[in-house]
Length: 458
Image 1 (cartoon, one colour):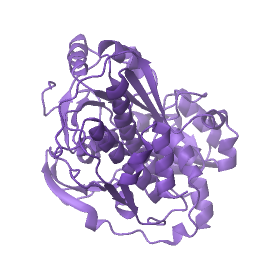
Image 2 (cartoon, helix red, strand yellow):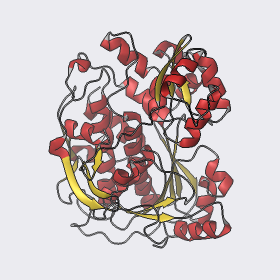
Image 3 (cartoon, one colour):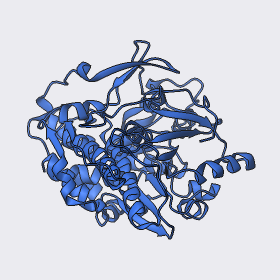
């Protein structure tokens, strides 16, 4: 499938006007990064979908359509998530994260958060205060891969066994996903159209759109950053008690960052006021997490009729794994991608894809879904629920087909796409937006700031 065909299928799924597809220019061809999968196609099609949907909303608000141009190499470079602070590119992986040989296969452990790392080490019978990576590797050799995966899941940890595509396809979760579309945009309540400020032709397409961002791990922050680059006023809401990953410096470009504790009455009150002034809410809690705090989709629609509520999960709303935690690297392992990349390389060991493309593509799909639902909201009113999952994105990526000889490619330099700015974290270098808008260039008009820097008021 070509990137243009992939874009067209996403566009039609969102129910947006067919004629808008005449206003997109896609350049470049696979392969652009070393992979047997169409990672460039996935990056280019989802990034262009997000930008084009924002521009279509701008057209709905009364300004002319404009051409969106996306180069495949630039899009893939943006999806690497590369950044540096004060000239140093952080190591994004904890020393205990990664693939481990088990007694009968492989297991991938995600240990970037301390509680996940400590839980996995205890599950291996190790003392987290003294264990080394070598200790963990030796302990995993005594465990069966699927048994460790099951024990980790029951303990609320994040570790998955390596599967081939055939092994994944035989699971109940794969069969549940096979019946689902790439994403869903569903009307969940009645409401009049929410008024958006008038838009002038020189304004970015999402100017005046207020977005509440309740996400921490990569896909959700990428979604709200994309919306910010297209003009939205994004407020990142962090809990003062939860940790963040280093990538927050990069994904906070264009956003304000506030602290609100949703587990306190005061915090709930503050957040309710913010929600009542928002047009979009983006969240990446595990299914049921925000419902327990009183801010699930239905509750949000009751509090703010007309809201567009965008939710991300690991495995989607259907199937036995709906409650399982999961990150991009883990789904690559569990769903067969690492096995397939290893087979394509011919070295007999599993291999990761060259970027966290499931996170990145899911983020841009969330951004596209937000603009598409806003487009519908402006035309017909209603409250809307957009749902995206990493597993549905992975299933779609697999459907794009394989790239012959892709792994023979040398990883390209991304230096031409880097921009540098001051931030609350130091001198920040990152990939500039790959979506080029003919009339109103995309970009970040607000510097990345540390959590809690701004006040929680619009």
